[in-house]
Image (cartoon, rainbow, N blue to C red; front, side, top):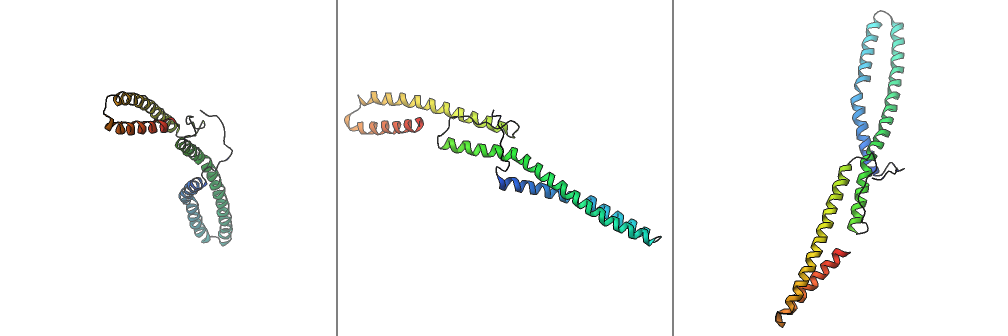
Length: 187
């Protein structure tokens, strides 16, 4: 397993920012309850107090406004912290997906024989193991197929000695196709 650290935290910015904004939006909507409740309580208390003292009610209204500003600033600070944490959290998702895409492109282009590893602490470690098992099985199957194709080519060579001349072209075509398949596997 690779133990290196990435310094870029926005690996897939579109996904990570959308994820973080969605998460912050949910938290913002769910946390609107307490400022609205406090506002409603203070308004009821101010109305109750205004019956006995207008001066105290005016002071409470000023304090209510200040309190709501402070609560709003706290809310913004909290959302900023949640946004940053969401970027770090989504980094542990986007990083493995980026690495997986890069690995599959390299496999497709036949430019790697390495195994897939994710960083320690990344999510989806089991995906890397499963992908490695799949490619190991495919490599084993390819090797077995190549061995069998060699045997078939040998049988066809033996058959060409006993088959009439007019059927030799068919055997030659089959042999050349087998050689093309073997070349493709050996790349």
